[in-house]
Length: 292
Image 1 (tube, rainbow, N blue to C red):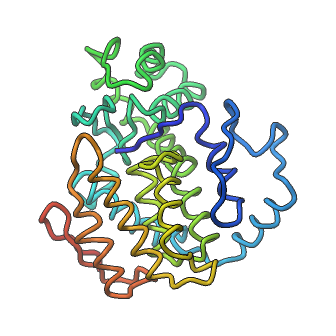
Image 2 (image 1 turned 180 degrees about the vertical axis):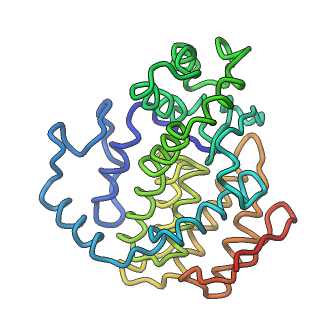
């Protein structure tokens, strides 16, 4: 279940914090933008840091590890390792974010579903979801189904049969969540497990700067422990980050199970498996999963 709570500016937030060195004041949100500048050129210091990050080992971005990450997220979001079976999944799970759908839980109330459908429709204007765009814009930021019922869930499942829509889900996931999380984790000196922990938190909490958003959680963790890039112990920092992530889950009005932390990520960390090496054995909602 994804939460993009700062509508219209998630990429601004990701870029401005990604290229800040360590803990800093919250970034200024300045309207809608999809790149560091209108021309697409990053500031010189940002470009230098990007080169440093690109020179690091791929970590979670390696194809095999990205597959593992997708399986781990699917176990928590849908109780399955077959994450590709979730392209057509859609339901309202009653958490106040409207419809939750697709491979990471794009939500009609949290802007990411709107971004996904708008992008898909730009390339494929005759798709089954296109007629629902006015309604998606109207319900953005709410849990309302107005204008979506009846028909939206059937249209989503029909669109999910289109390889182009599945590719659009992959692209939106990577652009909004996977790539920013992995790059920031590398900037913080984290290995593959830490990169996954950041990614899962980004998916669950959204890239917000408030206390229960990803960047708010990171700020709180950095107040408790130094990142590896700051000279701290990686395991100690990740313990602090998981503590803050768990606290954010428990603070929600609609409670969620915390086993993705307690019996999955914390298990890998306690084992010292900072490289997320297989075999992996974990539990979510009491069910045991394995990747060998």
